[in-house]
Amino acid sequence: MNFDKELDARGLNCPLPILRAKKSLAELESGQVLRIIATDPGSVKDFAAFAKQTGNELLASAQKDKEFEFFMKRK
Amino acid sequence: MGATPEIANIDELVNRRIEELLPQKLEEALRQREESKPGSMAIIATRGTLDWAYPPFILASTAAALGWDVQIFFTFYGLNLLKKDVSDLKVSPLGNPGMPMKMPFGPEWFKGINWNIPNIVQAGVPGFETVATMLMQQTIKNNGVATIEELRGLSLEADVKFVACQMTVDLFGFSHDDFIPGLDFAGAATFLPVARNADVSLFM
Image 1 (cartoon, chains in turn cyan, brown):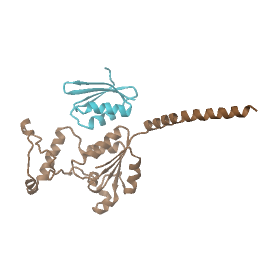
Image 2 (cartoon, helix red, strand yellow; image 1 turned 60 degrees about the vertical axis):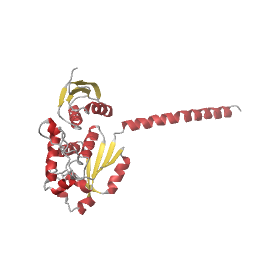
Image 3 (spheres, chains in turn orange, red; image 1 turned 90 degrees about the vertical axis):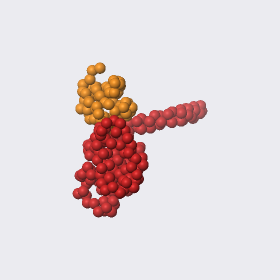
Image 4 (tube, rainbow over the protein chains, first blue to last red; image 1 turned 135 degrees about the horizontal axis):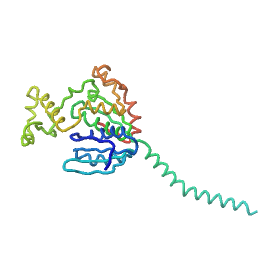
């Protein structure tokens, strides 16, 4: 999937992946896509909830080995 | 004349229709208003130890990231969380049987051991609290958990409002200079109206 910016949140724990993602999204234009890679297993539910609350669309969420990958489109 | 009964009839039909439609429209308008309103949270932070410093700042910074309006009212020992230097916050396993005592270094089997240290030893050995705090700080680092200073900074950056309890400042003999800048000093009468309008209100 194409993306405009990438956030490496590996090794970070709650709530840092969400806080960093919020910051990275703020640097994007509306409609642009952020790719996030995280290792916190809690981030799967958290990013879904974050997307629902903020209106930024979670385009995809996948697990690769012990890493989690998210694509989020800025509102 | 036939006109008057007809008008009365139309009036009645209009009234009946309004009564049918009004509740639906009202409900829809209220729901839209509710959805467009940002969330809000009011927290009272009363604890001043390293472990209890986390919940208010984690929730506040996360709520701010969700676009909520957040206020934290710091009172009693919670004021310690607003000191310029928070690197000296301590944690005490003494009298806290829920706290695991594990080593943040060494091989996996060693790290897995939960050291069951009796209260009498914890209380009697000088510097036990300092050592426990150092181990906790190392564990925090190993797990990629943010420091209190970092979470506090992120909360402030995201416009979380910090209010310090003036009564406690006087009671404990603190001065405003002991604390980070940008605080409001106020009392219960300031917190309550905020809490009344908050969707989430928590005491920690």
